[in-house]
Length: 462
RNA sequence: GGCUGGGUAGCAAAAUGGUUAUGCGUGGGUUUGCAAAACCUUUGACGCCGGUUCGAUUCCGGCCCCAGCCUCCA
Image 1 (cartoon, rainbow, N blue to C red):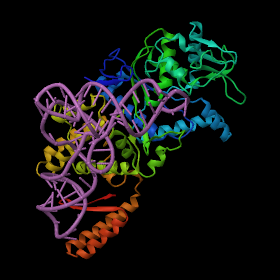
Image 2 (image 1 turned 60 degrees about the vertical axis):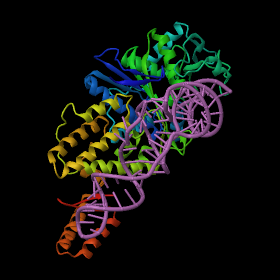
Image 3 (image 1 turned 135 degrees about the vertical axis):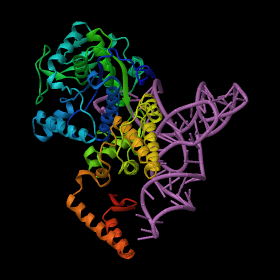
Image 4 (image 1 turned 90 degrees about the vertical axis):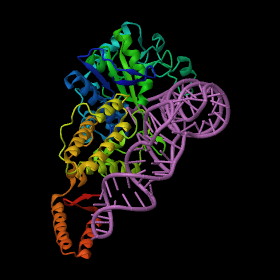
């Protein structure tokens, strides 16, 4: 029984699809005006694990995964103007970059990636419905606002009371709003801004409405899971609930899931603070799987501290796992084994990935123990290890490829290494230990580690 | 100020009312020409103060500290 922490009720609940034949998941994706950073990588990976497991449980053809792309907003317009380019050109570039990064991280593609600019009709229709039903009003400045006071449950998701929000010191005062807490659905066009026609004049949608329009259009008014970063809980998701429920008259989402932040020096990594590393920055120094592993070392709702030291640890951990798998032909995993049962218990307990990683190591140790004496048993353990690792998107490379530095490694250099190893094997046969050690040290300086085993000498990149 | 989370050994990070987390690191051993890898073993922790209990890191209360949201943000 899969149990998921529902942020709407603040409780772990048994997950039951609304319709067992169509499990529906929506995740708030990226605003595409820059490269994705490690915080974005976390959302991608966390919900990739959710998606993979839902597919495992219900069948891939029964799970619909939608992850939107925000391709029009203030920052995009600003950046495009800065660059002196059309905003569509800017967003196209960063959508492409996002796909490259996500693919490298082993993130499966969602079924659809709806974009705000391609959903103008649905967005305008929804705003129209809200105006017609009296939940929204056109203001004197040409903007259309959502009247927060009309939606009684407002604040339920974030645990906020309207009174408390009003008492807060940071609520902006805007003369054209009836209430400072009202939020914008349609922004009237300003000079040098892209705009679309609407019943309220030229303009563009507010941020929140696009997700209400796209999620309900792609998945129906009422769907199973809505996810995103914790910073979206308020106001973004709170506003989505208000808009969607008011516009459709139906219940919106059953389960809300939010992942915790990536931190640097105990502070949230964010674009506004400028303390972020892009996925590309990190990929220049670490294999993408190291990033994925690092993200899975902490539970998805906990904070995750970013540092080189932690990435080094993640790399060492993956090296251990791949070393265990090296030279072992995995057997198809038998159903119903003790490790599998523990894996299921862990992942079904609100996606407890740290517990799963612990299991991977127990299996790696089991493989190493049996490798020499009981090859059959080792192959079985390897099969079990790969079975559970694949469900969290790990250990998908060939062990040799990972240990030798992956596809970036220059093969001619690899040939040179092989030659030196042959020379060293001759020296060892001659019991010329000085020469043997000299070659090993020479390679060591280049970051190549040699390991002499019963089956011969193997090497890996440090 | 209001509202959320969290404080576990050198670092990272789970579970759990009484029994080994796990990884990296450290000490010892096996193995190796010497190493490396691997295996065995050692070291270890539950923010502070009370309460409940035969027994609490785990439940309850108070306190201290940290992070986040209340403004764009995954």
